[in-house]
Length: 268
Image (tube, rainbow, N blue to C red):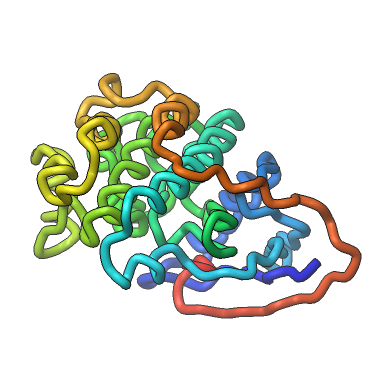
């Protein structure tokens, strides 16, 4: 098995303590997770400060989306896979808090496309009070932040569901539903402005699918889907072809790919 070595790189003048906190968050989250659509940790060295992650032979979903809007028959299978990953994360008592195209890897082609959720540096327990690393709102992604996360309220899996809705909107429309002149303006729109219906922007989106996406982006968490699995179930009728599951075995050989990039996340 090939592996990717991820190690912390300071972002925006972070202190060594803040970098170590995000490394600790990710390591502790990945220890609790084991799912075909979640990146798998193979080994970690807390003293040396690195994680060995199962290598995914693919690119970021954000790169794929740079080519413009994607039709629903491709986007919906992606969303179902992301929902399955999120549901596993939530079942482990965690919230990812930064689901976005840059934190999703896509491999394979056609009906064999396989998505993998990565970068758990902001993951937190649903039992935790708001707070943590400095400027988490800035380190997160304003384009996909739920209103309650921006306000600093207690969050749960429904905050990730909101982010999945924003991702869906971005993929189908080729742009984000909310985009201000700066991050603060974007976050203010997330809190106050109603999301435009995707079928008003992309006429080819069926009304029923637009209803699902609109519900994921409700300002009130109580109005969203209760769980990522419920959202996946609502989306499944819109999947034209169900791709076969990708084998999740453990090949014999291990090769290491060492990559250092500006920012904390190896893949983001």
